[in-house]
Image: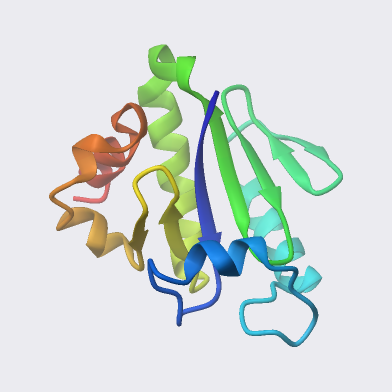
Length: 144
């Protein structure tokens, strides 16, 4: 079992249509299509951090999580059992989340069915304690 966070470029998404967006094949030119150049730029920014990544095709692999790059989203996933490394994981996710928010992505938590469009929304989120092993709650505190 894994916990997933999805970052998307389509600003018109709502809780009513985001699942359909993620399930529908997307093509070049569609609203929300993430160009290869954007993937490459984000990969370079992520590799420039202090996070120890290995690169595999369309993924960056860290010791406790992975970042996968798709046409419609960037997915960050980690196993639920990573709770013993939650502080390290949350620090690394804070760095990645900042990169993605700065690049105009929005965050969708499919487990909670919650959209977060900016890091400030993490700060005002009253439900963040419910999010995967409290990682978003930890992210929230790191952005203060």
